[in-house]
Image (cartoon, rainbow, N blue to C red):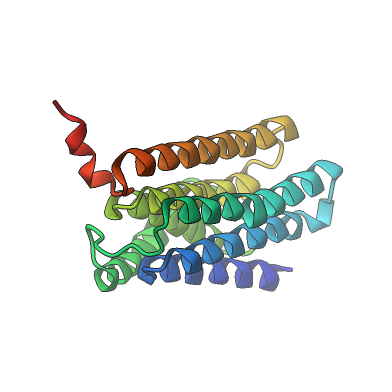
Length: 214
């Protein structure tokens, strides 16, 4: 069991690094969808020894929303906006990967400082979760396209989700499903905002929103 969890966490870290190095939006969305499906399966694997209906519901909800619904909304957004790549990020892709390695190292160090109980899966889970959180935050800050920033928000939430699933076992299912609902609403709102930004300005570069000043 721990081997499967550790493998899932290593795949999570690899997709984080891929997201930092990709410029094309469709592969980025595909990587995000893979993370969503991975976390859906991870939810059930992490609690296989004491599987309850609420865990299955949360895992399936995560699998469906993050693996299919969110990617579909993002693909629709890039079709509407007619944008397919992040061409001029604030931080270049090679430097982003180096930053990702630094974030991984910082996450390993930070996980040793946090007063958390050792989760199933050994010492890999918390560093992987923190790396994913920092990766999402980095995408929000270091990219110009609103779609990529929306993607960063989803990735950041994935990191929070992993820690929540492993560390807060007794949180009611209604609260956990409520968090997924919040993320769903946020993605829908971002999709609407992206559409209106593109319709008004013929681009979705958030750095050019300074033109709204007047």
